[in-house]
Length: 354
Image 1: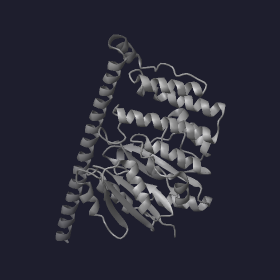
Image 2: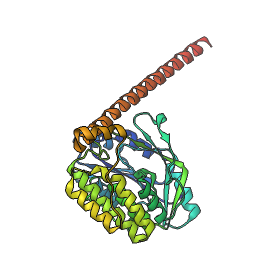
Image 3: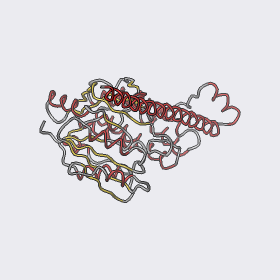
Image 4: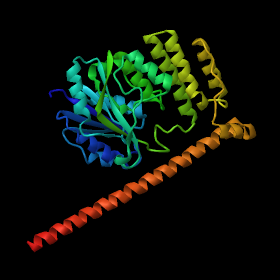
């Protein structure tokens, strides 16, 4: 119970969610914790909202906008914790998340074991979040974890991890060149520096689908494409540095193939570089496959327009899902408030009668 846990929150234009995120950090049942919030030049009320939580154990600082990775590096510079809990400004920790992972840390002993947890997607309503296990939800050795992640194109959100200071220092800082998939690349290095990954099933995280405009939203911008390409190169370099074998090269090729559609066919220079990378791994990337209805469309309007239509359709579907979830959330909130009011009235009547 003597270990200090630092909960580090980078924030940029997060006024809609930041209060709920900080509350989930403050509510952690682990007694020794500090919270460091770095406002990365937000243009909305993020800083003002965060400052309402300032206290001896909640530090709020600001810097000029430099990106999420720079904000995370700043937060780590300021923290004192024996363990690090990364937390994006729109995600939530379940109350016992850190405590249960710290129990596991004491069980295994040593600071080189990396701790992961279960997680669920959600939008507005926590209750609608569903925990759907993936093959990463188990104890694994570092190279096995990376092979599984890359071969099946899986991921774990930043908040799922609890990382010792020793591991954090061994992995090095977040890569400020990356504006997209920076977390994927960073935690590859954390995994590489670890001796084993311990999955703690009773520890939980809620990962918010924030929608368009968020850092995790892939909008086909040139900056995010270049960042994704660099992150993919680094992923493969990290894996092969642990084990350069037929199976790790096969996993790397699968990883490239699954993400090839992001670039194909319009980004010709990156497509060529990806093919060269595949050739160095001993393979070649196939033309991406589309669902049958998009394949028919491609023959009529071409690849580029078909990809745009597909992207717009997915965005529209996301908007509808978000609207529906928001509507249910507010209806449930209204019903809950109404029930509380009725309960209060009933109690008042009962008191008066007695």
